[in-house]
Length: 139
Image (cartoon, rainbow, N blue to C red; front, side, top):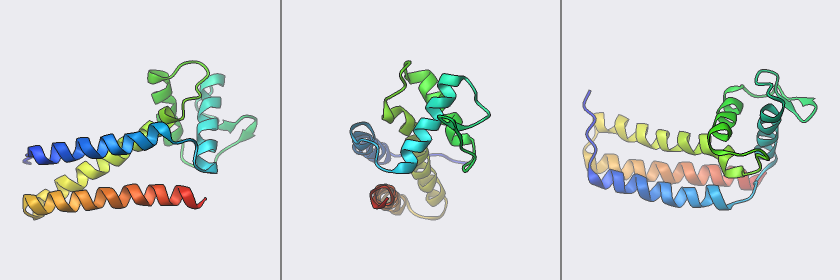
């Protein structure tokens, strides 16, 4: 398998990362689910109970546990005791966003010319970013 990246794609990825990261760091909590996920992950950190998901005292078994574990891991690495920085809870989703854009580019590289891969990846990243932003604003 041949993974060849051109400089234009790295510049594009850096630009998207810079623009997207500004919103991740500066925006407050946008919807109920984001606050619930962060609260449940914070409860896991404080209680040191990593299997039984609770939001304060209420059990929260509505979603798979992987997102909670990834938020806890990012807080273990980058956070400190009050665990109130929302951008740390958003970091796993941000990494997933960039991996998605990278995989779209790599997939398209197998079937299309490089200039089409770049433009399609650019378009896809903006669609993903606006879809994420739009779905969080509606709630």
